[in-house]
Image (cartoon, rainbow, N blue to C red):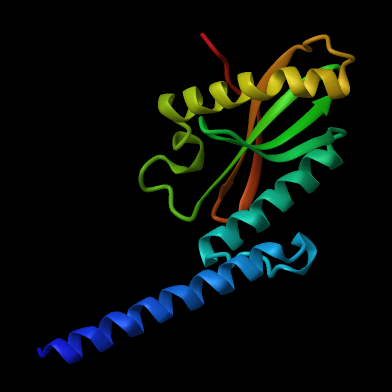
Length: 160
């Protein structure tokens, strides 16, 4: 590789970097409503469908939606719902095969601990918004989909 070829390659790389930075800054200046939604994988789309089906099932049982997809560094709460005076944190899980125990078995100790940390993070905010600041009784439910069929597990796990 000659010095001239190397110089030309460096100039082209710098020009490409400047162009990419300009495009990124221009996209960041656009209002969020004009930005295209992020692309979702087929697995994420299936998860979205199961979450929507779980929400329909729980609403039909009289629960009221408070929030969806509450994210923290510790984890994510799929649905936060109200069942009378109880705050319900709902985990939605799906498995096509029951080979390794199925969807309910996939909520192991580590997942339960992550959900508990995420719930502890969001509990004060949800109490402020919906219970005038008083922490309500809370429970962890799960809606599991085995071969496409939903099953609601009230009190799927408890914190020890």
